[in-house]
Length: 232
Image (cartoon, rainbow, N blue to C red; front, side, top):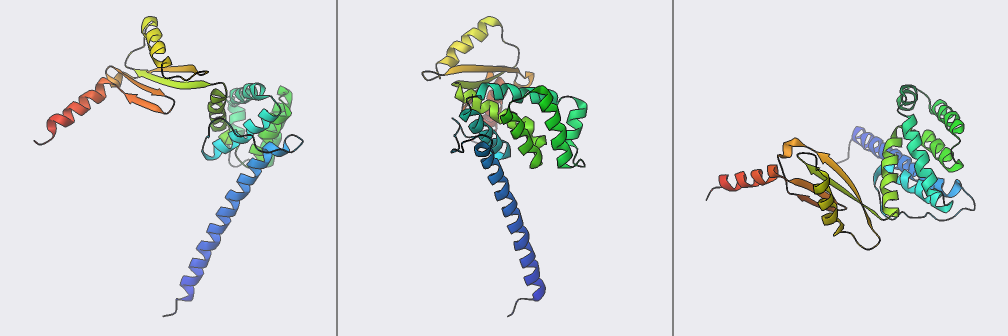
């Protein structure tokens, strides 16, 4: 039985749309990869970060790390990126960056003018222009977060998050740091972030690098309740 011409056309349309999406994704990847090699000369290979970060923001952060690493300006670029995030808190600047109705070239010129006044490095200026050209300026906070993770790994910092029901006093905090330091390898330093969440009732939830432990009273009660309610 011959397939209907209508079905063939619909299938052809779907394949065409899929091909366009794949081509657009490939072009984006090429632009991001080329940033780290064209922003400075001579052209060189991509410098891989100490950890891999994923997603669109991760690709941009990796390209920025590579470019800054080649120029030996990682610390400067990290500071400049933090400055841009601070600037984006301004309602007018934020409105321009996140308004989908404003053309990319207008956004690019606005950001370019602001950063020129801030006297940022050519690397950061070019990077912001790449984001604007690709319509990704709204991703800047996510890129900054990904870049921060890369820089923490570059400095040998191990990110650790601890959640408790109540704030820890100095004594408990000191004991916690000592205990967590036991997970570190030679040359690594602890970067501790503490949070409070009364809903966990007691105990703590700890995340060290890729390790996770939920020792909260809430979870213990839930496990006990499940055990009691299981049929014998």
